[in-house]
Amino acid sequence: MGPENDSRVSGFLLLGISEDPRLQPGLFGLFLSMYLITVLGNLLIILATASDPRLHTPMYFFLSNLSFVDVCFTSTTVPKMLLNLHTHSQAISYEECITQTHFFVLFSGLDIFLLTVMAYDRFVAICHPLRYTAIMSPRLCVGLVLGSWLINITDSLLQSFMVLRLTFCTHLAIPHFFCELNQVVHLACSDTFPNDVVIYFGVLLLVCFPLAGILYSYSQIVSSIRAISSAEGKYKAFSTCASHLSVVSLFYGTILGVYLSSTVTQNSHSTGTASVMYSVVTPMLNPFIYSLRNKDLKRALNKLLVVDSMKMPSVRRLNYVNECTSGHHSCHSSTLCLNKAGGYECGCRRGWRPFFIWATLPGQIHTQCEDVNECTSGHHNCHSSAHCLNKAGGYECRCRRGWRPIPGSPEGPTHTQCEALTLELQVPGDRQVTLSQNQTKMQLTWDLAQKPGHPGPAMVGLISIPKMGKLLAEAPLVLEPAQEATAETNWGPHLTPALLSDVITAFLSHRDTQNLSSPVTFTFSHRVSA
Image 1 (cartoon, rainbow, N blue to C red):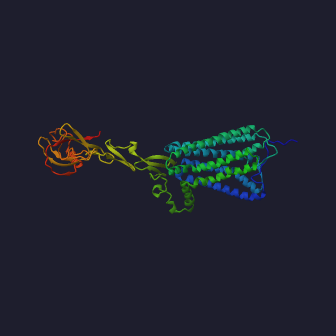
Image 2 (tube, one colour):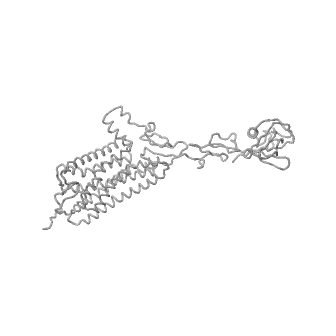
Image 3 (cartoon, rainbow, N blue to C red):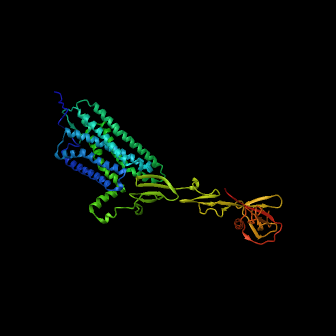
């Protein structure tokens, strides 16, 4: 007699993780503890995010949705397993099995989609920090979550309808602790090829594509982090996505390991045991992973657990934290902490410029700065006659050797304008020599006198020039205007009293009156750089 077929069987048998009755009390206590920790931990994440206005950001919005999905994901399978362990029963009705399959597919797919959305959020925060608030708008965040729900509801309904069309035989034992879709389909006596096609198409569309999106996001994140010069900056940028990367690795590592191993081995009990990792352990660890190194989340949890439970007014006065004055910020040493409503911002000091910017939250823009070398980059206001010297946090303009600041030019270390002083020596004959400060050091003995035939005062004296022998040794000289004196000033357009005074102090070292004869004429002029 052939096997009895029935498309609407009364129920199935869940063989569970172990059929040994001696292990069931221990398994019951273990899974009950894990389930309570999962529910409590994820609910605390949701409550902390909702109660703290500082956490009303895209990253924590997605995290609270992930926590809600994790609670639902675990509640789909664990309560029925606990009931069977407690009652020493393995039965599950047909309707319960189909319902469990439907919601398991729904919430596992939502887990994957939300992890992908969170990877995109980290990508925008690190690679496009200045546009983070504009890109991750509330409308986009809600749209991403609703889109994830819509896609996975459609997929789970399709998978459930495909199971409803199957015909099952008398062998109804499922070697698993819940009604896993693959295991249920393989119990059918009818043709399961359409179901296999839909299942593999769903895996490709809802598992592989999101995984590709996560890998692409992290490839861009790694490229941006590698561009940071300092190790401290790299660590801070990577720490903003380390928790998410840990959860993704744990979830995808276990789920891919389970289904890849199931294609190699036929040991269904080992597959069911491995499934505990992604269906029970991962949702339990998520709250700990996300809150372990997250100061904002730990502060919100502390506020939720300590302040609201103890009702202490003295503690309530500590709710507002000024991160900048209290030191509870992560600004780089090259930046200044600027307190903002709901957070803080790190800005570059004067004379420094942003080198790398990333955002952990819209209210927390982290900046790493570098000293701006205005001199080499050309971003300075030094006159062409001055030399630019880079300083920490700025620069300074100094006159070149042989030049001096022009009297009356704009004052200040960054607005110096200089001029060169020149003596043109006319010795007896046609020989003419031009001397300036940057060519030689001249030492003169001089006297100031009114010489006959000169329209204005002239400077006379003796000059000796190193490295030129005794060409002018003990020879008298006359220092006079370069052009004829004007009627107004009696000096000449290129020789002013201020410049003559500078010549006296710059070129002449000491005063010694001499008996002068056969004067040698020096024509004085000055040159100002354009």
